[in-house]
Amino acid sequence: MNFEIPARVEDYRARIADFVDREILPLEADRASFDAHGNIALPLLDTLRAKARAQGLWCLQLKPETGGQGLGKMGMAVCYEEMNRSIFGPVAFNSGAPDDGNMMVLEALATPQQKQKWLAPIVEGRVRSAFAMTEPHPGGGSDPSMIMTRAERRGDKYVVTGRKWFITGAEEASHFILVARTSDDARHGLSALLFHRDQPGWRIKRRIEIMGPEEHGGHCELEFDGLEIPAEDLLAGEGKGMKVTQVRLGPARLTHCMRWLGLAKRCVEIARAYAAERYGFGQRLADRESIQLKLGDLAMRIEIGRMLVMKAAWELDRGGFARKEVSMAKVHVANVLHDAADIGIQINGARGYSTDTVLEWIYRYARQARLVDGADEVHKMVLNRFLNEEELGFWRWRVEGEA
Image 1 (cartoon, helix red, strand yellow):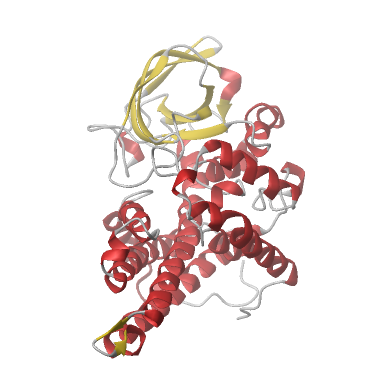
Image 2 (cartoon, one colour):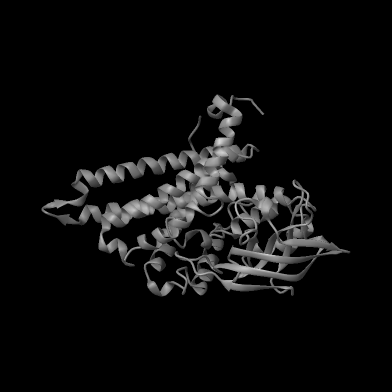
């Protein structure tokens, strides 16, 4: 097993690290840089994006013919972790959710005409996008088979009725990927369709207020009342909605983990810096065994997370689905991010609870990590299913030369 990274990937990692240090962290430290929802103000983001693009640090995850650099999932793991040393980082490089996952699924499944119409504007940074799947009860959440929003074929178009909610980025999105029911077939009843925000027949009912800071465009509830989508904007074919969700959500869950590792490391960085300078009862915090145990444990758990992410990335790069590997990474990294923020705040005391550092921002953000793209419990159930099917083979090493 070779844990070395290619020199080309290291070059991108180093350049991203330098960009984050020089261009992004100074903005993050200025409260005037934030919008009303706890994210970077859009005018500042536009400036950062132009600089990142000029320096060749744009859409690294996509293929060269799509406008990227073709790093693959393992290269992305290295670079995304570095991007998210800052809470503003990934979106500046056009590698933030939900655009990241939407671009990758469109790159994989869209027709050439669809790529030109729906993908290229996102790659170029001219529009933002959203993925509309989750529904309020009794509709589909972690279980897509429960989806109730319907898209009825009428001639050369589909007519959509139903509701979605917690749709990330919807208020700022122009391009949407919608998962809806086109039949009652248990396996092939879902389809994915593409629509533009200016098409009539739908509306944003509300922007749902949440505990943490928000992505641009928030998390919204949508209503569909006769939205007409031309059949040419069907993605991957009728009845292929489950395939679309699998192609999108597996890698998207993993890219979340890549970014969360960067945030977890940032929490440790802030905690260590404060512990090194803060004295109490005649002793530096950094010299106290209790602090050393907390930070050492976090360092180990973050490294375990990196190994889980890299194994899943390797499996995806070789053409596998990595369902088991992604689930393990998702559960572990989501929890270590939450604990890293919590411990960082504890070591910093009142300073950590204030807005003087980004620890409180990360703490509020981290709580969603154990819910988004499948709750911990769902992923553990998936792992148990694999355990039942594979038994001792669950832990089997893949042998060189195997398909």
